Amino acid sequence: MKHFINIKDVPYKTLRKILSDTKKRKDLRKKLKTLEIDKDNPLKGILLIQMFEKSSLRTRLSFYLAIRQLGGSALTLRPDELHLSKGGESLSDTAKILSTYGDIFVLRTDNEKKLNSFKKFLSIPLINGLSPNSHPAQILSDIFTIEEITKKNISRLNICWIGDSNNVLNSLIEASIKFSFKLNIGCPKNYNPPSEMQRMISQKSSKIKIFNNPKVAIKNADVVLTDKVISMNDKVNKKKKIKDFLNFKINSKLMSLSNKAILLHCLPRGSEITDEVFYGKKSKVWQQALNRVHVQKSILLYCLNKLR
Ligand code: CP
Ligand code: NVA
Image (tube, rainbow, N blue to C red):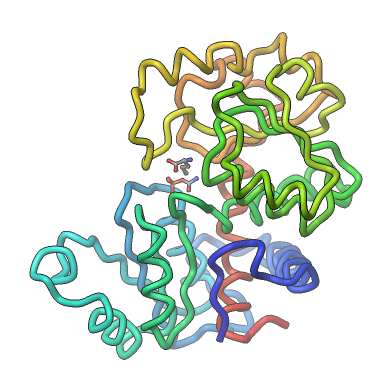
């Protein structure tokens, strides 16, 4: 069994294998309805347990559909219904029970340490469904979407992130290192990626550049990604932060400086993008959201040693 916690922990060849499995499976189920099971029924009898300590629409639905389409079932837990957060049951006992009843666990947590503790005590695979520092399933899925739309290997594209230095960007940085693509980051000066990420960049990549001017960052971009200015885990003066990002709002004028880039946004969205761009022709956000199902199916298979 394997965990899927951070992109940086998974070998490049394996990430590629996950993406090629996604393509094969997506092609094969073109005529199937939402809950029809893939012909090979590879996860028949498997139970996915997922727990969300933070809000989620896409991640919970896409993992639900992913396991169902592979022949298994899903159970979604709310932490406030468990003894873990209310009755004081230990995390190790909770993990033991999850491993006894279930076959694979998806966790969205507001605490990085909790991911490590679950990893330590679970005897089933653990998938990170977003943590304060990482959103690996989102970014692997976004790479699939980018290659599906552009029909190019991502290493041949200029990728640009305009926005906050958050969990999604961290995973994008890790992906840039693994997949060797150019990544321009555009963010206000006081919001550069954290020092440990900058250290990783300077040690492992010459293709990642940080700009504090969005017009410079977006130049030549084939793909522009962004995310909310205020993340779920942000404990900041929200008004001030939104104001600090005003010049980084993605509008048509800024997009016109790119190389006719497509626009991706993991959703949910806030004030970082205009409706015109978000609903515009170059926006691929709905295809992006649906691809979460397809890529996560291959991630589940990878974790359960069933990847073809
Ligand atoms: N993009 C994403 O993970 O969305 P949710 O927070 O709705 O799961
Ligand atoms: N950066 C956002 C992503 C939401 C999917 C957050 O953590 O809230």
